Image 1 (tube, protein in one colour):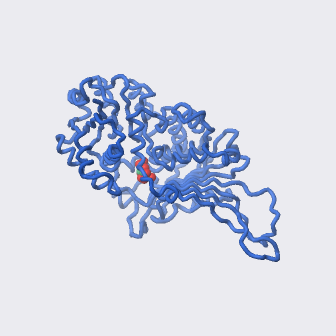
Image 2 (tube, rainbow, N blue to C red):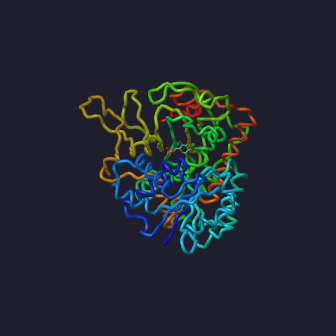
Image 3 (tube, helix red, strand yellow):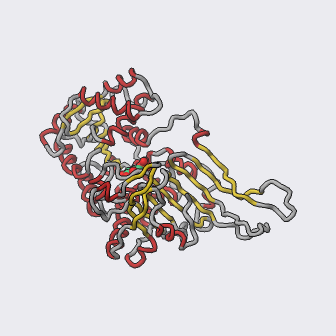
Length: 481
Ligand code: BG6
């Protein structure tokens, strides 16, 4: 028998993502027949209480009629529940007993507030649950700056070696994000062009239409820089910019990513305004509805940014002089995550375009909600033009939804939970990556604070403050919407 221990078993992430993902893995026959899943949380539930909660979570969050009643019953039979206050060291014995005859689980997943990580790790260690081979998964936020992330990482390292510490960035579990690696490293077409000689700039956008979603305490203490840029956006940047790894293994891939993160040019106090624009949404219209501003949702004024646009530079040979424009925000006009690789224009144009613009090639990788890869090319407009050849920009389009119409689209946590249980760490974040990410973000936050720069207002449903458009336009670049 083996066991997976899930802390925070009754929480929001567990209901929306973790239980539905584990169920989906079970339906697909990917969980060992004898795997037990032991949930733990403060709530005074019993096994049946947890089973009822999990059944509801499956009904609410598993799409497309996956499985059936018998499949749900089979999954629920795997569950066990141990109520535990993570700070009560005496309670961990019961957890150990539930972890099976040898008391050593295959993996422990902490889906709890980071303020509990220290006590939880101490409790696990004292109860002998930090045993040989057990893997520990941690959810973000891993600290709120470099210093606090080091405290968490040190606490973890005192009980779990780095190669068994699985730090989650759920963007790495997304199929579309892994597809970025396939696009770059399973095709010979792009790599020769993937450098400063041919690429003008890169844009990475993660736009959301949602607002605070009730996460008042967490979000107001974090803001977009720490909630989205420090982790998801910098991971996307690292995947776009890294050198080809030797193979798709944890050391090779993460060694290459961390080199990029360490090569990010520090944004200093003197030039922060030219590199970073922060914003906070006011009232407006999002998803077709009138919505209140951030401060109204919060109930008081706040200096927390809900939008950030950045111009980043990577100081290495490959990316010399190629800006990376990053943009993310809440209450933007649409939910869209995409990466745009803007190539340089042709060196000399042989056609007389009569003043019409000729666009340089652009590779648009849409990560969500739709999965598409579009290569924008100039083509001849059909016709017998006496005065030359007319040109038009046309996409060469790989609609992934069409190409893989019969394949079920998995949520990120299915991949991550399977890799955790089976011990593959390539898609998890190593300590040196997290710390390099924090170092860069801390520099920006310090520079903003030193200049007294507060977030600029923007209307909900707009693309952020106009200064964000200026940030790119100053370089002759427009954001790809
Ligand atoms: C989380 C952030 O990490 O990512 C949220 O805390 C954000 O604020 C979410 O909404 C976005 O994830 P996704 O998968 O919906 O793009």
